[in-house]
Length: 108
Image (tube, rainbow, N blue to C red; front, side):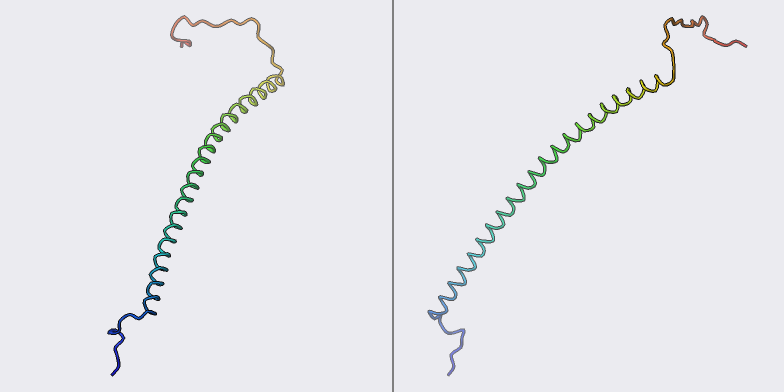
């Protein structure tokens, strides 16, 4: 008579194999859990650092806009002075203004 494999009790060799497989399974679960925690932690650090860099970039961009506006003001004033000097205009010394008596300036 042949003995069925299912009816055989665990032999010593099978118990060692089962314990080794159980140990490797738990070790894999613990190792992968540790790896997951490490990867999530490193990604959170990177996102936090990226947020800090975005804040610095925003501050530098605002400062750059202010500097551009001030540069354009200075540059436009310099250009206006050069343009006025080139037109040959004379400085007005005695200015008189026209006073309107009625609300109508031109009468038919």
